[in-house]
Length: 257
Image 1 (cartoon, helix red, strand yellow):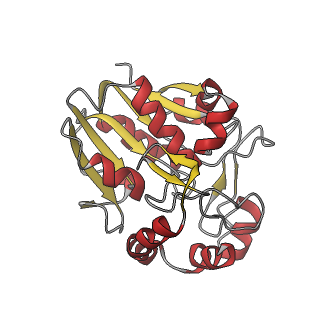
Image 2 (cartoon, helix red, strand yellow; image 1 turned 30 degrees about the horizontal axis):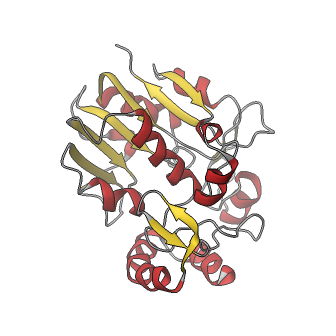
Image 3 (tube, helix red, strand yellow; image 1 turned 135 degrees about the vertical axis):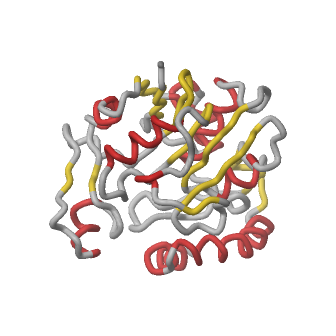
């Protein structure tokens, strides 16, 4: 199973992978039913999660068989559930590159005025380049844009566009892969070969590997950034049961004015 999923992730274009995953998640959910693992997004109980990853390192027990959430998605969900009011108060939300696990839940929540956007994803209602978001200034209460800024050619332009469409007082969750051994973000526009990009940036379609300076990079667009170790608020038993990402910070970027 690990090698099968690894092959899909590495070789199948995302647009087809999304369509493929919907059909097979229902089968996986039945096969993996149990009581050891719990997904707080779909509220499913499983004997274990599926493997997931581009490499064989730390790939086991990660992907929810039902809603296809990963550790980072489950952490974000618990933050939204426990620390925000978006599930109880009217909220206009722009979800860029919508993840399947969130998409299925968000579109059913009556308090959300839910917009989805992506360059090509079949989950997106609006198709656009993040460097030119086709919405007016001060349009959204919340923007979610996870694991996108490591792909784009002009990160500052993209984050500035997110800042622009947020209302004053609005906030965004802007997760990226972080290499904690890098003090500063590593990028080199001359590296264009997919194999070389994987070697340098961790994935064939990444154009940078963010370092510990990531919050400061977001602040250049105007954001006030909170780096939150939210997994640390749970017990060891809860972390293992939900398979939350130990040590992965949440980046909450706020537009203060």
